[in-house]
Image (cartoon, rainbow, N blue to C red; front, side, top):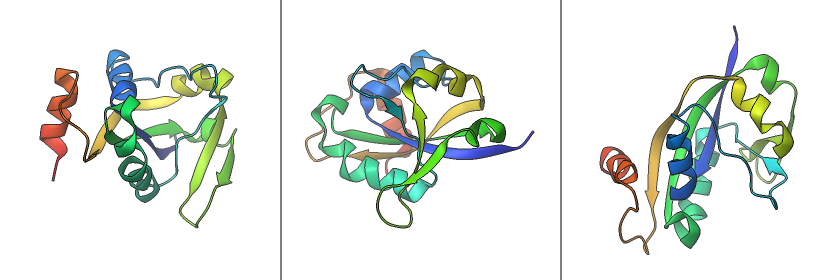
Length: 137
């Protein structure tokens, strides 16, 4: 089985939801979020985590880069959209198809990087603090 590696920048709240799903699924989108968009490379995921997530109070000023593998046949069902520079490629998965997309994840969702914003004070969950301690530079 062929797989494709994708990345997803997330804040603290989404990371906790991923952990509650045993690192096997991404949580449903909020009603005002019609698209789930993992990105195609670590550099772009890191850019989002460091520039956007670290300034977001809802995510507790934390950005985590997650990495996961998806079956190639599922990957090929969706459009790749370029939203800026040459590294800014996202896979646009309609939110209504996220359950099927999640079912095609091979293995675990891995946390590979953390970015900490200037306004971050403390983690709201022990799992989050564990990841910060494990990944911070």
